[in-house]
Length: 102
Image (cartoon, rainbow, N blue to C red; front, top):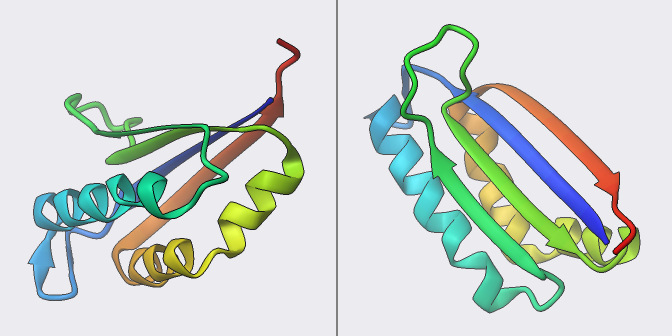
């Protein structure tokens, strides 16, 4: 199993909205992906509640059967729509992908 974790920091203003509005929009876009992309095994989206300087604004935790299914998810047209939105609103991105033996 592959665990895929992504964290984003968002611009204070982007696409005519503030950070909290864009975070909420991003969360809704991401939440729709599991019903549209069959490769997703587990999917969780969270908005930050901590005001620490080290905190990200939005986090995604997801699981996939293999690196191959993760790659198919990443190339899926519905995922690519989210990526295009993210490119406009994010100031920073961090990713970790790792394998877990069940």
